[in-house]
Amino acid sequence: MTQVAPARSPINHWSPRRALALAVLSVAVAAASACGSASSTKRDTPPPDAAATDAPLGTLAADLGFRPDVNGFPFANYGNDVTNLTNLTPKEMQDIFGNVVCSDPAAPDCTLIPPAQTWMDKQNRSMSGGHCQGMSVTALLLFKKLINPSDYGADSVASLSLANNAALQARIAESFQYQYFPGVAAGTVEGTPVEVLTALTKALTDKTVTYGLGIFKADRTGGHEITPIAVEDKGNGVSAILVYDNNYPKAIRELDIDTNANTWTYVGSTNPAEAEGEYKGDASTKTLNIDPLEPGVAKQPCPFCAPPQQSAKRSPMGHTIATVASTTSYEDIYLAGDPNNHAHLLITDDKGRRLGYAGSTFVNEIPGARVDYPKLGKDFTEAEEPEYFVPTGTALTITVDGSPIKDSDSEEIGLIGPGDDLFVDVTIGGGHKDAFSVNSDRTNLTYKSGADEKPSIQFGSDRASSDFEFTVNPSALAGGSTVGLSLSDANLSIDASAVPGNDAYDIQMKRLDANGNDLVFKHSGLTVPGGGTAQLGYASWDHAGDSIPVTVQSGGQTTQDQLSDQR
Image: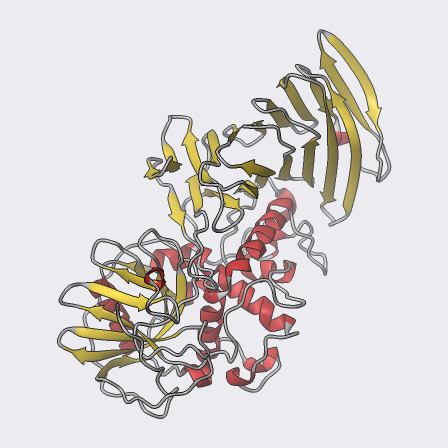
């Protein structure tokens, strides 16, 4: 095991030297990473603020000029346990995507369309594992003077405080999203260690592109984003990428690359005796990449917004803002749960092609699909489910396999696409399998329970006249039951034809009109007989307190009634 030496002195014992320009090897890639609590293979410092005085070991081949004690944050990477934390808000969503995310683009305060709200909530939850990507990107934005520390309450980066600094917290949360931007993914260089080193050395020398550095465990878990600041030639074919690791403020740390063996090593804990704390890879693992800063600065295409012809209320104002083009439309499929005790997803399209975990084997058979491993970085041992991106326009079945779960886990399984979102909140027991299927235009969802459960099912739709969000909660769905929900322009339908007994459903509806007005309807205990259906005529509802017509069919009988608002 590699032994860890003290951290370098932040700046006094090294300075820019001759730059060794290397030819760049371009490698096409698109892969995000996750943020584990990481440290370096040499010159580590368990106390983050400790300073040491070891001299440089070799010659600097390239140098960005970034110094962790001057240009890095004085605080360490953090999760969502910060007191009074601010992550993404509608303001940051507008800054990323433009007014297209707002129900009323002209309103002074943005009310998010349902898919945007679902996406923002998901992203905010994911940062509980750390903000390493956001901290690395924000530090580089400050270093490049694209933003100013004075906007966040200090005259220098080294003087910035995280506590009670909502503006800086929100900026870091916004920067965290860079890993999901198509331009950043397209410019990411992922290859062998030597290929990544060559490309990074060229970029640090030319200073035309600014990169972050993503690292992963061999199984793509525990990912982390650090900031490469220089390359040191240590001789005998060994180079060190000197980095600012936001888990260790002020310290200069290093990732070692053996160009002879084409391998790399980085220790992911302060204790080098912990085998699981070591990051390492070779020419075959593709677990090291560099991702560009500059493509993330522009307005981004909105991956979950309806096309202009569907959402006319935001055209052309919203849909002409983004300056980064997106050529393929994807749907984001995700599982949010315990990072170390969660189910796996297996996505199957209408041709039987699969993406995800078939038992313990990972498969990717769907053309054009991609898998992203988010960069979080607070705990290197976490192994969150990756996010799956599937081209739009095909029917899908998403199997939730609880085989890896010990006892149970409360999880959210969702799909966010252009103009629509849907997700299920449910507690999955160990060994249980649930599944939900959606049709090609996402107007129909069926959910099959693997055990007695109480799922909460939500539909969101971004439509031309108004945006709607529907939540349907069966009170007790028996194991093996299948409940269906379908949405037309006029009705929300509940299909209990494959539910063995009567069940009561709690209904909530939110309506956002083109002016951003938010109307809410709630009704508890709508009884739908087993084998029957219920149809709610939501389109006619446009005033708070008004009832909604409901038609229940069962056993050849049809009953019509008014569903009262019980708010």
